[in-house]
Structure formats: structure tokens, C-alpha cells
Length: 209
Ligand SMILES: C[S@@+](CC[C@H](N)C(=O)[O-])C[C@H]1O[C@@H](n2cnc3c(N)ncnc32)[C@H](O)[C@@H]1O
Image (cartoon, rainbow, N blue to C red; front, side, top):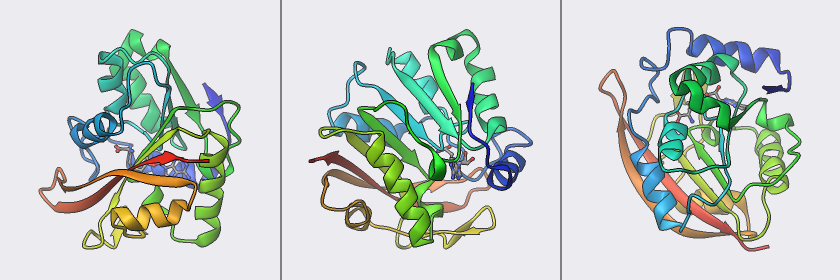
């Protein structure tokens, strides 16, 4: 497992996964909305995928099941990734696991699909957003697809004790800039394990240049 150190952020998120992932507010059994966005953006199993801030999410299980063969999951939390690896057992060997803070990450290759559910919205400082977008740019080439699920404009204003930025799909596209064209959007009412409804905005974008 490749590792890029960022102790403070890692410690916070490791703590969130301390008791597994099923009690986390962002927990979902099936990544239905992510898969719907994959389909609408024309993603196929031949495409390389990176799940940024994937943590313990079950997207990787779904993609392994659909025979995607070039899969990477990046997260600052080794504990979060550990839950996913343990769950996948032998299938975990076919996945690349990166323990890294995306804000300081220097990709060594590119990906056809960048997926982010509930990570980008934690970046409220302009400089952090700029660093994230720098990584996105370095990890993709024209034609790539980026899929984002962020808290909607009427979503929560904080999560896990952290403030968040809220978006509609047009706002996500605006933040990504001219290089990215919005190709699909959606809205989701996510229900947390504690039965709280959290509205999400979804956007799929294709890189133009
Ligand atoms: C709300 S959780 C969402 C997890 C996953 N995407 C899902 O849908 O279940 C946010 C995730 O982002 C990770 N994360 C937060 N800040 C990060 C950063 N700067 N770099 C990499 N991962 C980060 C956390 O460890 C956590 O796994």
C-alpha cells in the first residue's frame, strides 16, 4: 500500500471509522446513485477508475463485481481503507489502495474516471479547493469523466464536526471550471443510519481540454 503522510487529517478520519463504517452518516449499502452516474456518463469496465476519498465505501465492491479491472481507491484514512480491503478479501489484491491526502497528492499516472462522493464538499477554503483541483487535473486527461456527489444547497451545513460547502450540479461544474463540461446531473435524498435525510447533488462532467 502506497502511503503519503498527513497525520492530523488521517487521525480525524481514522477515528470516524473506529467502529467500522456502518454507523457513519455517509454509509450506504449499495452505491446506486454513483452507478447511475457511471452509466449516464458512458463509463465501461474497460475504463480505469479512482475513487477519491473512497474510505470503506462499497463502490469498489460493485465495480469488482462488474469486472472493472483497473481500480484505485485513495483515502487519507488507512483504517477506512482497511475495512474495504478486509471485506473484499482476495479481490482486494486486484485493487490499488493509496493512503494519501488528496490535497498533497502527486499522481504518478492518469485515470479515465475520477469519483468523489462526499469528499470535495469538505473543502471550504479556496486554497484547499485549488490543491484538490490541481490533483484532479494531474490525474486526468481530456475525455476523462469526473463524478461528484456533494451536499445539495439544502443539505447539511456540517458533517462529522466539519463545515461543508454546498452545491447544485451547476455549482460543482462552475467550481471545476471551463475545462469540464457537465454531462449529467441528479439529486439524491440520502438517509443516514440514524434516519436523517441528507440531500445530495450529483454531477458527471467530461474533461474538454
Ligand atoms: C464522508 S466520507 C465519504 C467516504 C466515501 N466516499 C463514501 O461515499 O462512503 C469522506 C471520506 O473522505 C476521506 N478524506 C477526507 N479528507 C481527505 C483528504 N484530504 N484526502 C483524502 N481523503 C480524505 C475520509 O477519510 C473519508 O473516507
